[in-house]
Amino acid sequence: MEDESILSRPATPPDRELTYGPERENLAEIRDGGERGAHRPLVILLHGGFWRPAYDRIHTRPMAQALAAAGWTVATPEYRRIPGNPEATLQDVRLALETLPARVEHHNGEVLLVGHSAGGHLALWAAAAGLRCPIRGVLALAPVADLRLAHERRLGGGAVQAFLGVPPEGRPEVDPIRMPEPQARVTLLQGEGDEIVPPEVARSYAAAHPKARLVPLPGAAHFALIDPVSTAWPTVLEELELLAKP
Image (cartoon, rainbow, N blue to C red; front, side, top):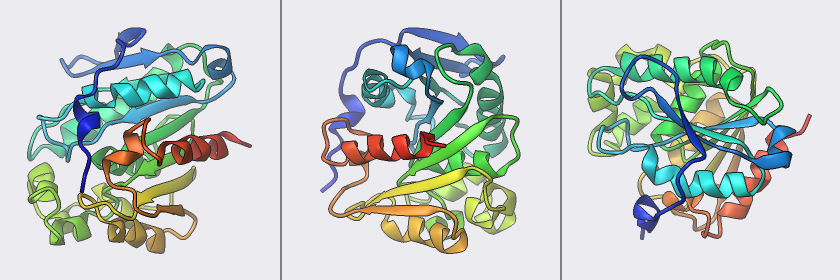
């Protein structure tokens, strides 16, 4: 049974907001990681929600707050979510990743890209798309990493085609499993009890990209990976630490 309480749990306001582009959605919430954060990569956190306009960055505030408390400076960008217009989403993610590292203080100049669910798809896409961003590593949490498989399984009630506007066979350059191996280190963290993005999706990506590290979490559900009070949370922090190491 999926616990969705994290989607409506309150959190403290961010330390500040930055505008990274001309669109109304081109905002990023910044949380300062303090002295520890100044010596670590910047965490750029991409929220999920099956690329739909109903789901925004607000539900990741408890996660971003917990990451900052653990000593990570965090930027959580919003991005456009327009059904049938994936270019708007991808343009915003590209612009955020290429702009924010130079505008956010208190990090070491590198980036750890963290994405959950559809945000995990965007993180894996970004890592393979040749962006001008110093990505040290990617932590993909229950990512929609294989768009064809997700489409076949009708995840999110047909969310993949709603996002793309066409079946995923026609957009291989947007599907992480069919893109080149990312240069950055990639870790996929996947709950074995996930009923929303089932484990077979992450396993499919890991099989196609053998350099990626797949970490299964027995019993963990989909939202446990972004919930700081879940039993999965210590593993999220451990995997971030591993990605940050030289």
